[in-house]
Length: 103
Image (tube, rainbow, N blue to C red):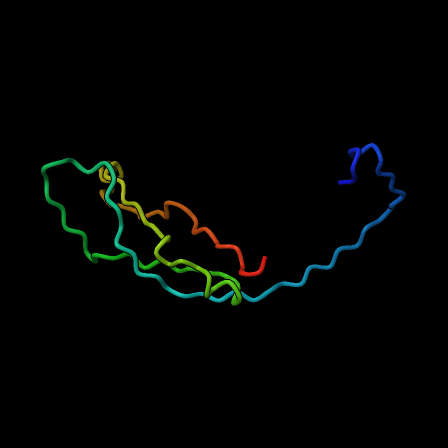
């Protein structure tokens, strides 16, 4: 935005052409031990399998910067009270991408 704000911008553009070039993604699995949420205290639970496989996709140039320890999975006890008592894992947050060096 120019100094002085958008009032200083004048455009006579009638048509804009945009060409998108798809970029390839790489996929790789990450095994995660899920965090149990809202499970009753004092009771023991067994999770089988003990890990959840999360399929992560990213651009090839970003794969080295991805901190795989930031991939988190939650299991909520409340899902066991549905008509079909099963627990569906969900990802808690998206991993943060550290800034590229030299930026």
